[in-house]
Image (cartoon, rainbow, N blue to C red; front, side):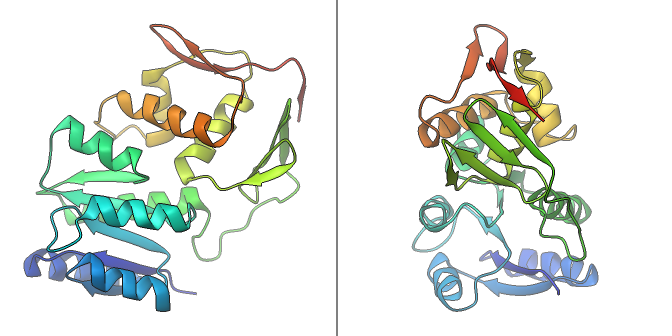
Length: 231
């Protein structure tokens, strides 16, 4: 089954370039010029991924991203924007973006990031997983193959990066990871954003999983504390 990507961009040239490159890779593309049009698509034929501009007429990309995340954490969102300040990138990621690409960008880089995000989300066509691969750290249960998180026995809605960070820390309980290490392991070696993205991701996780034993190692990074680990 072909992955469907919704491209929300009001610049015609960028629309054409992004569509051409992604269609060449076999993706189904729907292009929209506004967040309002995108919301109509969401309610009728939800895409498997959004590629989202920030500076849009009417509702901006930040507000649209926020609305989508109120509905689901399962659909990846890649933000593309001319806004290149650190604050803008952090805000986009904090609101639930899975990646942030600054204009002008290489279409090939965008394609690579799309494939990587799909792979991490385990929605790539033909991909198989081992549903029996489970990890338990205290009250946190993670099904790696199914990419499902349970906290005190209740399944939680988490984003791709929230899952990746939780799995990494739970698989290495009591080991401290620096923010720089977490950036490389969760965002990838080609991510050039601030390590504040790690802090914002941890803040979102703590908000969802109250009292999760995800400890701050002051001046360094984070670790998952657990007295009982089963694998």
